[in-house]
Image: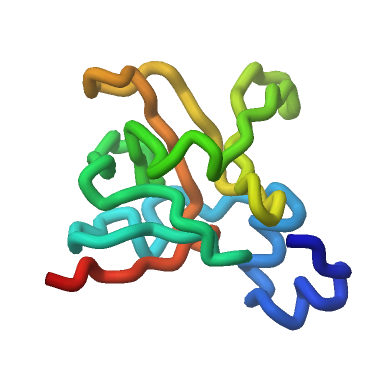
Length: 129
C-alpha cells in the first residue's frame, strides 16, 4: 500500500503519523491497548492488515502491548535496527511499511518472542461469536 506523505497525513492522526511513518514511539504505559484484554484481532492502523490475535497477547510489564507471535508470518517484516546505540529488531507492517514497534527474543512464553508494539499503530476488532 503506497500513499504519498500528504495522503498519509490525511488518513492518520498526528500521533499515528509520527509513529507509523517516522518510527516514533508512544510513551510507555499510556497506550490504549496496553491493558486491553478483549478477544479479537489487532490490525495495522495504517492499512488494516491483521497482525496479532488477542490470544498471543501477554503482559510483559514493558509498557507497550506485547505479543508472542504474529497472525501470519507474511504480515510483518523484521529489520535490523541499530539506532540510538542499541541493537534491536524493528517490526514493520509488510503491507504499508508502517513502523509498529520492536521484537525482543526474551519473552516468557514458549516462542521466546516479545513483540512490543505501539498501541497507536494498532486498531482492534472484537471477535464475533
